[in-house]
Length: 462
Image (cartoon, rainbow, N blue to C red; front, side, top):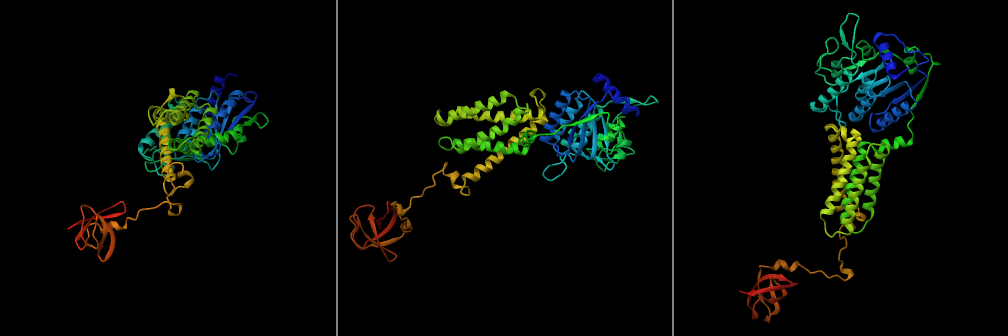
């Protein structure tokens, strides 16, 4: 059976409550579990699962959802991938599909929910304190939810009236408390569906307590199909960790801070080693995932080469260093942009904004780290490479000049001896060595201290 016909058959079953797929048409189901916070790791799992399902020619992709949400950007990427999947996509909400999870569930061709499950609450919030973001962000999320609902199209009921399969207004109500849906929710609350409510308003197709129940609703007994589940390996977990925005900001901090410290210390040492390791950990996961293009990595390598030339070959700091730093920064930012768009041909403002926030966060962290490490509060093993820490101690043979006699400047006294030009003077009852600033001064003459220089008091006759 062709994929096109399979989709039509599945949609017919959803529209009219009849199952037309036969057990011999669905021999295997590929299942993807999204049970964690939606982020870089879950996006990679989705990519891998979809590629594997396509390779195995699996006629059905089942997304097992139990998540409280996560990153909007990664949820949008998962949503787009599911909408573009060539075969039917079934969603099974096992307890929770909140926030970003509701967006992913909405992207599935049909949705089954466990009794007592919930789906909704898609308001965009600040990850730091959980407060709702400004309306600019909510507007974008409303449009994304509305477009996802509209992508499922319309149907004509038995009376000839056309209806949305999934009402876009309901999708907006999950984002914005100001959206009112007559008979469902007023304009004071953000919408979250229970299982029965989701079924009543056609956001879920039926209640199911397990994957086995989902398949039973499609008319298959447990011996009529097999389930192959995607299992992430250690590499998936590692790549997911290093493509996390917070980790990327820290790696950018190390790259920027290492380059700066290297430019202010002789030779190449720990700062350059730290920057190189951070760069490898930053770019390698993106390259392995197929996200960062080869030319972006080459641009970064070119920037590093120019910085090395600036340190060892070109005197001073000039065009070579500026060009090198520019290439490094451009490569880092472009790598982030491709992380969210996966192709510069699909560049959008949201991807640029997300990338710039991560990059600026990394630079700010680098500035803070540099200030601390090079300040008097920082460890000496760092500061000794960037400043002179030695002090000239008297015990080592260094002699300091006593500046305390400078307090006599401006005071008056009398010459105790003739000054030709050196002699002694009495000031405030103290006998001091002094030098006549001009001519000779006879004993008992009144004098005034005019300066203290080269460890000598200089006086002038009044």
